[in-house]
Length: 245
Image 1 (cartoon, rainbow, N blue to C red):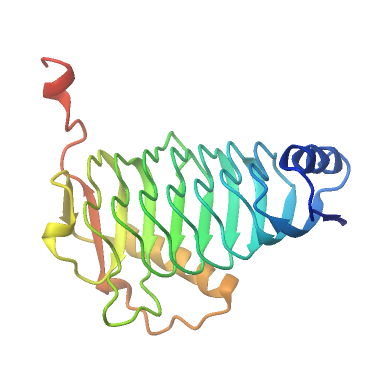
Image 2 (cartoon, rainbow, N blue to C red):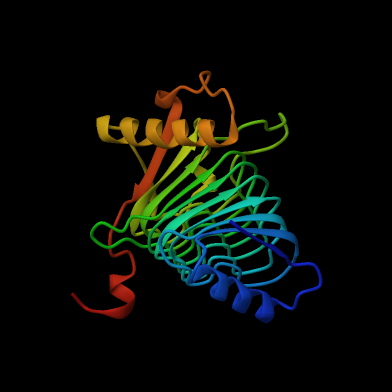
């Protein structure tokens, strides 16, 4: 295992150093991370990085199989266009988490910001998954074309709401799972509430169990049947705007 002290290291230099180390050592620890961008971008399979501090924007962009575990908060665009791998955040994340994400998994212990899961997509066996322990801001799952988002709604105050408005606006694939019933006005017109089936229940249970194990939480009080599922009411909602058939 190689430990890298990132204190006062310019982001380009830090990422080059990570690339060099990853060629021979697949277990890396980064300490004193303070806003350096693009950490983990393009990192391949079998590389594991533990990050202590606050990585900057676009962490894990285009990541290709590595595992990043962050002991702190993530900023914006975590997992941007990520292909494969896993991200674990022991904290909160900012806006556009999982932007255009194409595969892999992201687990966030706390809350996330706006436009999480925007343009997520899937292809064959590539199905991106985002699991959030707390709440999400507005435009969750905007223009979503595949994959899944799971919101657990843990530790919220009575005045806090698990989602903001415009959830699922423009969605045409994938699914959003939210703990509890939600008001219809919070959703874009393209998002439709559908019934949970046996596959959904097994899917949710598997990822909730992993979340509980990873963050050492007792989630036995969560009832899978209490989750609401939202999916696309039309797989081609803008057909009339761009074509005549």
